[in-house]
Length: 96
Ligand SMILES: [Ca+2]
Image (cartoon, rainbow, N blue to C red):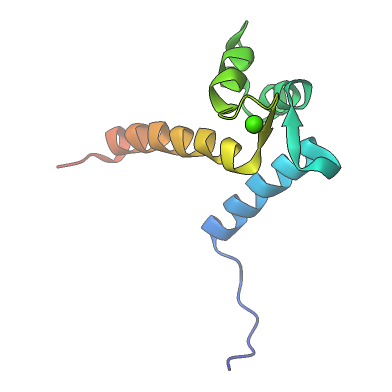
């Protein structure tokens, strides 16, 4: 096996930072309460922190109506954000 230490890729780092941001806000129970979610949105996704926006997002993400957003629920938001980002990148870089 190749023992050379590989540098983490940009994708690796991006995913790791996402997981760390979730974990830091979710705490020991690995779930975001509404207050924790709103704090994460305000700090990491300021574009979504308009009046009532975080509440609406939370309601949409809490699929099982448990009152908290777990990691599988959270990554649905990340997927949607990635999609929107991709549309912007396509416009900037040009697509056929
Ligand atoms: Ca939930």
